[in-house]
Structure formats: C-alpha cells, structure tokens
Amino acid sequence: MDLSNYVDVPTRFAMALERWPELRIMENRPEVITVGDKVFISVTMQAWRTPDDQIPAQATAWEPIPGLTPFTRNSEMMNASTSALGRVLGLMLSFGPKMASTEEVRNRQETTAPAVLVKQPQNAPRQALGANATDRPSEAQLKYLRGLNYEGPAPETRTEASALIKRLAP
Image (cartoon, rainbow, N blue to C red; front, side, top):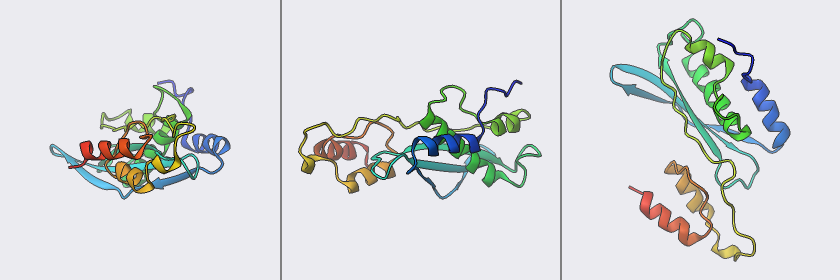
C-alpha cells in the first residue's frame, strides 16, 4: 500500500499550530467499549482553534484490546490517543477522505478493527453580525450541547440553543 500521501500526526499538529497559534487540545477520559465479543479502548479528542471557538472539532478512535499487531499490542491506549488526535487535526485541516495517519494504515494492514469518526464542521455558523449580544447562546448552553455530543452548527441565539437542548436532552 502506498503511504506517500499520508501526513503523520506530528506534521498535522505543526500545521495546525501554524494556522491556529492559540490551538488547544483536550483528550477526554478513555472508555472501554464492548462490541459483541470484542473489546476496544475508545479515545475522543477535542480541539479549540481559538479561545472563543464555540464548538470545537471532535474525533474518536477505537483500538482493539489486546492489540492485534506488534505495533498496537500493549500500546492500545497510546495508539487510540494518537489516532484520535490525527483525526481531529485532519478534520480541521480538511484532509478529506485521506483521514487515516500513516500509523493507522500500517497498524491496520493485518486487521479490520473498526474506527469511529465523529466529524465536527470546521466552519460552523457564528453569531450573526449586528445581533444583540445578550441573545447569543450562553456558555452554559454551548457546554451542555457539547456534553450531548451535538455535532451540528452552533446555534445563533439563546432561543435556538434552548430548542436544540430540549430536542436532544434525554
């Protein structure tokens, strides 16, 4: 398999920092997921392009436990973490269908373990120009939507955010 077109995670990270100097990355607590009789470690990363980025990019990657290749065995958590970071950076940098990192491709050549990708729109609509600042969604509303794993565009008003929360909340 030709891996010459793939951009590795350190390069993606450097590209993202060059584009967004205030970039912040957060790794959520890993989860152990069971699908049928298979066990996976799931890692989700979020990336804020700027301090006021209302809806960060987010991506998730799974690694089987135990790892199925010499590259993943006993490093499942670290591989899932690197894969999730590479995916979230790829989404932000618009790599399109060539999302997998070189490491992911190499690690999967011997297996067909699933990977999950949660795509966040990079250019989610922001507050309309001239709108009343007090009508903007509150930080609490936006945080709650992130907690609900909302993946759509940022609501433009408190009313929109409230309606969205009411529709999505359990």
